[in-house]
Length: 341
Image 1 (tube, rainbow, N blue to C red):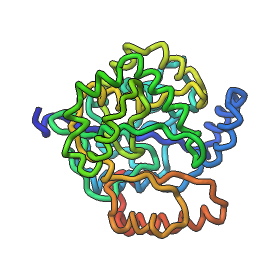
Image 2 (image 1 turned 45 degrees about the vertical axis):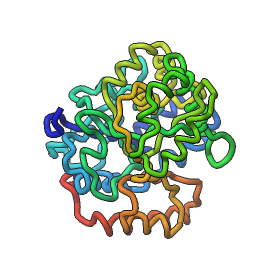
Image 3 (image 1 turned 30 degrees about the horizontal axis):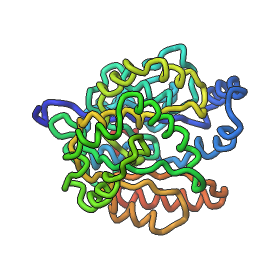
Image 4 (image 1 turned 90 degrees about the vertical axis):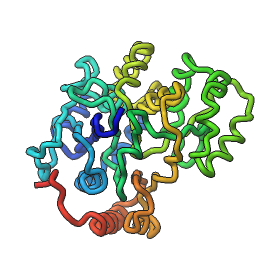
């Protein structure tokens, strides 16, 4: 398949945590929310006013993108140019089955992306804290229709450092995947893609992991920034695990039963349907702290793709960090994009 013959879309989800209609709806279901979830809501829905920079980064650094499917709960930023031909507005009710709605669980939102009408087979998933900070090419994500990715075994980390938020989800992912794949089998079948020179320095780490004889999953690393996905992977996993995924999507809020979209990526890796490359050196997830290294990383184009993860900072720290963050983004993306009015 020639590169120019298939479109690559972006799916970008966003929630306006200040929307009174959304807040009223959420309050009606809060009794179903765990105390842990309630304790982190202020951070999860805190607005850094950076969504416009996500769109700027797409237009400036990934101008080859076909369509941007902007997924919201019927919300629209006031500055958004609804006439942009690349923009496709998607309401939750447009693609998520009605029995799951309303939902305040990001996993439900993301596990159903394959149902979005008009979405291409090849797409990149962005959250509202994912950015491109340097030029990326189609070939950084897909080559001849095949995802470009890294297969790197990595143990699930539990205990401290905020790992609790994702650890149970990752365990659930691997329990599901373990119903269909065995480590000893995929190690032999995918040897050439696991022990591949395209990984560079990561190859040494993979060699060490490869000799571990343990027969079951202990983890496969998924970077938390822009990555390629296939709609067909979603369809395959839903076809064989519909009952399990249906159970997850019925939960209005995050819970210890959750599975996340990472399972779709890893399913594709375990099938061997990927081009090996060290994508870990191209991106980084960074915490939003008042650390000059963060702002310099953006201004100096240190990475091609980043995620900026919110932290439990005070109101004063939040204001100071936000001001510096906007300055850094304006240094590399000062012009409005065509997605802005």
